[in-house]
Each structure stands twice: as C-alpha cells, then as structure tokens.
Image 1: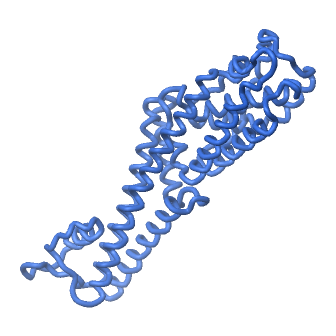
Image 2 (image 1 turned 90 degrees about the vertical axis):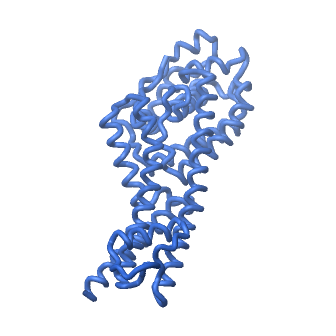
Length: 333
C-alpha cells in the first residue's frame, strides 16, 4: 500500500510539473515558442484538420480555435489529474464534512477540482498537516492557471485580428506581386511606397514577434483569401524582390525603408521554422515581367534580374511552403 501511494505521488507530481513547465513555456517564455506538449498537440490537430478538411477553408478555419481550446483543456486535465493522484498518494488526506463514508476516487477528483477552480465548496476538507499545505498549493496553481490563461487567450485573439487586418491591407494593394508593383508606380518612381513600407515594416515586426511568442497563431486559417497572412507575405516579399532586382536603383523607394521591409519579412519567415511549415519541394513560377512594359516601368537588363531571382529559390520555396501548409496556392499574373 505504501509503494502504491508513493507511485501515485510520483505520477501526480510528474503530471503537475509537466503542466506547469509547458504552461509557463508557452505563455510566459516569449522566445521559447510553444511548450513541448502544446507543440505536439497543435501539430497533431492541424494534421488531422488537413486530413479531414483538405484545403477547404471553412473547415481549416476551425483548426485555430480548436487548437487553442484543446491546449487549455490539456493544461486543465494535467493539473486536475495530477492533484487527484497526489491526494490519492497521501492516503486519508481528506475527509467529508458530514458522515464517515470512505473517500472514493470520485471524491478525490471532485475535491481536487474545486480546489483548482476555487469554488469554495465545503463538502470535503483536508485533514490537519501536509494535506492542508497541498490544498493551498493546488488552489495556487489553479489561480495561476486561470489568471495567465485568460491573459494568453486575449493576447492570441488580439494578434489574430491584427494579422488579418495586415493581410487585408496588403491584398487591397494587389492580388499579385506584379499588380502591387504596377499600382505603386507613379509614372516617375516608387516613392509612393515610402509611407506604406514604413507602416508595414512596423506592423510586420510586431506580428513576427507575436508569431514567435505564440506559434498557435500559425494555425488560425483565414476563410477569405483577402485576410490570409501567408499569401499576403508572399505577395509583399515578391513585390519587394521585383523592385529590388528588376528596377534600377534610381527609381526605388527609400533604400532604408526597403531594407527594413526586407528585414521584417526575414524576421517573419524565421518564425516559420518553429511551426509546422516546411519549404516547398517546388519552385514558384518566375514573375510575369511583361507587366513592367505595360506600365512603362524601367527595367534592369534581363540577365541581371533573372540571375537575381535564381538566387532567391530557397526563399521563394519557403514562401510557397507557407502557402501550401495553409492550403493555398501561389498567385501570379
């Protein structure tokens, strides 16, 4: 009996430690991304969503909320089961407020639950000694979970709104990189982009930091193409590449802003390495450079910009991989 109680204590402590480590890793460690359990659970749910729903946007849009809900439920379950096992390992650690009936597993589960959720129910009480200290610790972990869990939830929903607003703004300029470049040309140069590049760089840097801190954001699939972050990033990066490598420098927007925009996109792409994205095995098609002639935009020699785009294959495969993971295709004119 002593050995069995010790086993309950050890397993219960393992569950609680795993929960606390994964919870703090995911919610408080900004540079750590998702905790080991959360990361595996999220990837599993997303793979199942892709398997069941394919590329159907309506079905995939449920994956993000489901991943977030399943993560919160997983933390609650680990905490609840862990404290139940610990009270079982303490033997006769709790007693009913009325009567002398033996304590069952249901009673322990019930007692641990109302401690975690601080219901203040007096049906059971801890016996004097170590059980009282353990009860206080159980209540403390429950309060910690509720406080930080709500904060985490609000942060995620706020970031989802921000990323969709950003994507919508990019798509408003053009549904392809070629269209965006053509729209930005004022007949003389690309300086109309200066203010937009400054604004987009700031927004994207913030979004990249949020995606690194909360990888669950990658699983929030937008139903509408116009609010999809992966396609917006692909369009923006391809447009920057077109201007940078196919247009003479004298017609470029502000060089510092162009460099900052490139850096912000790199920062966002770096967050993809920590999620379920993988670079595509395919290379995206070369942009339609005829649109430059139609818009009368000056161009570099053909060999120069084609050679430059050849050096971007890995970068463009990563962008395409992000689109494929999100169930979308590469847009081109």
